[in-house]
Length: 608
Image (cartoon, rainbow, N blue to C red; front, side, top):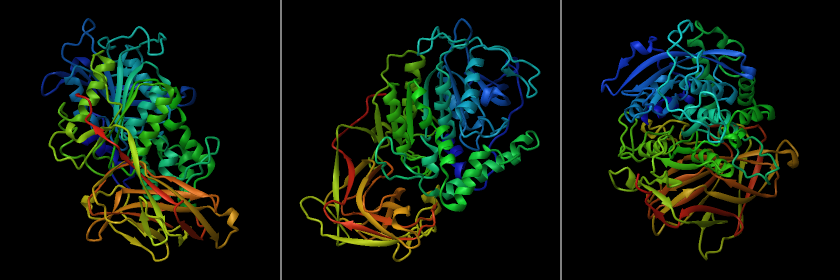
């Protein structure tokens, strides 16, 4: 999985080069044999029509992996896979070879706007990337007029007749060119699976890895709970490092392909113009307009998951400050509500750090690696009708387990509980029967500038860039006593506090201030580290009312003797907030609480 994650890392890179390029075209007759001779690989071009009413024609380049011995009399199921942001069809090559060696026909392709494929990046809009993937399914089903041996689409490719056909789709409907097919990919290549499954019921199983639920929440996060299902949650401060990286890398990709596809650099280069303009404005003002927020959500899974019925195995990285665990949790909850078969794994690594060497590597995928085995078994169950159960419904990676066995690191919670801390006026977090002292802390917020600096978005620990700076008067802190025993936290910490603020330039009723909630681990020497490098921005809309914040989900062990520290700051280096200066006061008493979810018990996942 390393190559998939590495391709996805470029999402927030301010500079970079387009990874990979289209290989020379080849017909089925000229297919190149693999090193192991278990399959052949053919590079083809695909003519797809996408966008509103299919008015836009694009060329997609991809490689077809055909296992040895597959024929019309002995067909095999298929898997589609595509790249992360800034990647190409070659990004997923090791995993494509792994699946082909297991008897799957694999079509690994460069997504629209990447790796030799034309047209703009659409941010995995179902009408664009979803429609493109659907036409590739039709190609695998033998449809003519889609596959070609050349970029000019002059030489038709031989029709495929060696993929297993389905009489009906999962919804009981007979569709043309219906085949047994799944999808897998990470980050940008993860959301496209959900987009494709929302427009094509022929897709039989998907495995989205390290992807998102709502781009509006990713780029302008607000972790303050809304007052109810009918009350829209306003956008939060702009995640500036990530947004700048998205815009810059998209432009670079468009420029690098301008000679072959000049349309991509018109208007806002290589991105949907309206969204691009909205994000540029948001970076300047510190807040995104309602129209841009709505557009981002509409093209995200949150806008269409109700139409997805394909069995879905969600896999999300525990070291990921781009698409955190809560993005997968939101997808999981939405799919469960529709009745779609769904399971979820929280694995080591992610966009913000490499996987543990005890967990997996896509460079050398193996059934001994728990995440790889779960993906393989998921496809075997739904594409090959194996009897192996795709359980458990949820498993998480425990980095504190001392074992070289990937499976031994994973557990499933059996019941849940929580540890409750109360905010005390003595800047303490107290628990148990200890009463909290009344008091308050005040901080300056709403300056629109970074008043605190911690780990930089997407910069891993290996760089050594781990600042811990907070300007005086811009933060409030509460710390626990040293822990008597280690404490495991699995899930989303929740904070409930009463916040009052006095606007310095505006009436209090019109002030909207961004606060930044952080959880720190303070060791026995007093050194502190930001837990999973997570920051939870929360918009204070109604001063005087209780502010409820659901922080991003984490898997973390606080060691014995360490302290839990809660910090609320008025700014953060990774965000551009609105300019609404205000003095914020946070109460401390028994009603102000921090709840940390802890597994009551854990069991090892079922044998895979």
